[in-house]
Amino acid sequence: MSLEALIFDVDGTLSNTEYDGHLRAFNETFKLFELDWHWDSELYSDLLSVSGGKERLAHYINHYNPKLESYLSVNDIADIHNKKTEIFVNHIVNGDISLRIGVDRLIEEAIECGLRLGIATTTSLKNVEALMTSTLGESVLDKFEVIGAGDVVKRKKPAPDIYQYVLDKMRLSCHECIAFEDSEIGFASSTLAGLKTVVTLSEYNKEQIFKGALIVLDHLGDENQPFEIIKGKPTNHSFVSVDYLKEIYEQDR
Image (cartoon, rainbow, N blue to C red; front, side):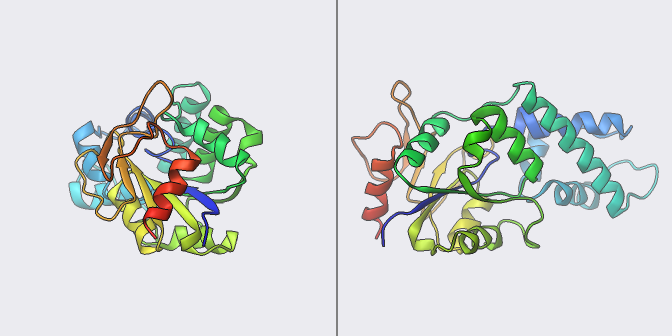
């Protein structure tokens, strides 16, 4: 089989959205709802072990016992998360969040080379559309055949369901694709779906192991910003290109 498609995670993979995006939006939302909560970077790093914003809020309430004036229902949590999404999208539109090094270049090259594109993420569809439209333009967003996002599957990462959903929609086998991830949760999801995975370390995932990844890099690299190989075979390539992806894809067969 040959390489036919690239499937991207979003948060931390396409863009470093966590600290300046999601964490900031959560804390701004807490103030609006007059909740006496503040998530610092260390706490948020722990909470990232839970996939999905609503699920993360519920986990925080159940395990960290924050101050509550009254019980928060599932609908209350959904309302908080919806406002947080609105604030997050506004930060994207205002240009506060950009793509990671090499992402736009690789996506453009993949399109030119005829590779198919998909997205598999636990973040909401609104977040994905806002980020992609703001940074790449609406025309590029249309090049992604399938966007698996939010609650489109019941079980979120680290379950493989979102990747399997994208594979099924694209009518491809896992052996015809490469996934891009940044976290252990996401890597577990792609690996359980049988996908070969490139890992680019993000702001909250620098100490994780990623055993079995095709390659672990600090970022995708560009001509003037070469990547650093954290784990994997040495190469003459200095940035992730389609040729490099095909090379490591074939080496792993």
